[in-house]
Amino acid sequence: MQTTLFVYSATGNSYYVARKIADALGETTIVLLPHSGPVEITERIGIISPIYSWVTPRVTSEFITSQLSQTNLKDIGYLFCIHTYGGLSGYAPMGTEMLLQNIGCLSSYQNTVKLPDTYVPLFSIATGAKYEAIYDKADRKIQRIIQDIKAEKIRPSMKLPLGKSLKNVLAHISYEEYRSYGERLSASDACIRCGKCVRLCPNKNITQTDGGKPQFGPDCLACFACLLGCPVSAIGYGPHHKTASYPNPRSGFDAIRK
Image (tube, rainbow, N blue to C red; front, side, top):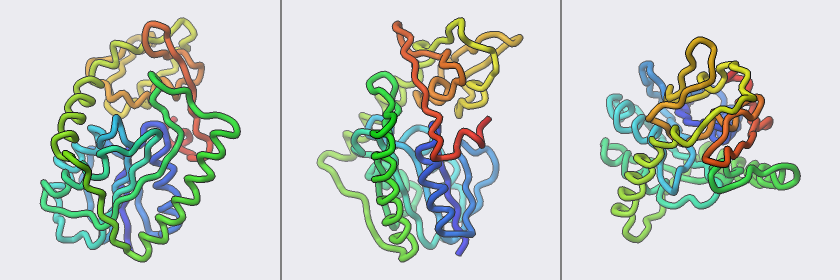
């Protein structure tokens, strides 16, 4: 059976899950989001995405409402959604299901995978034994998910109290708040002007003119791909210029986004 995975992954966490699933299923195409080309539907579809502030991130939401909605949804035999998160899954599974319902579609399966938290303003990136323990536990969960998908198991999202109202409020706050995060990012004198941050930004919110330092625009996603992927840790967040690095060697994601 042909499978297509639509994957939004800024740091490599969701890509890691997608690659594991693709390798196990075979005959699987991974399409990274945002995706500007045509959306081709196969019998089995997967949407794999991180969770931002307890809700579905803007990139994934816009893909469902603006692109997936324009396809022949009747051709989908089995649709599954996997959400990666660092803290709490919150309203993202239920919110994604609502987005699908709004375009006349239902998912057959929803599940979550916990991976290292990459929200730089609040958390430190897991390293060493803690990093390995998180991934080892995630690997076991991914294997169970793969078996569920192969068996086309039905697993709906959990309905939460006041879910629709709170989901909408949280999504609006996070989407609008995150847009301004570019004002909080800056590049230090350690910047080597390599332009990698420009290439990493999924929203094309970073520019670089005349080989200079990166300039951060007004439409940030707060994914921190630029900060975490900077080869010299020159990009920092906030007045204290908090830096971090997350090459995520297990995922192989860094190799495909150079």
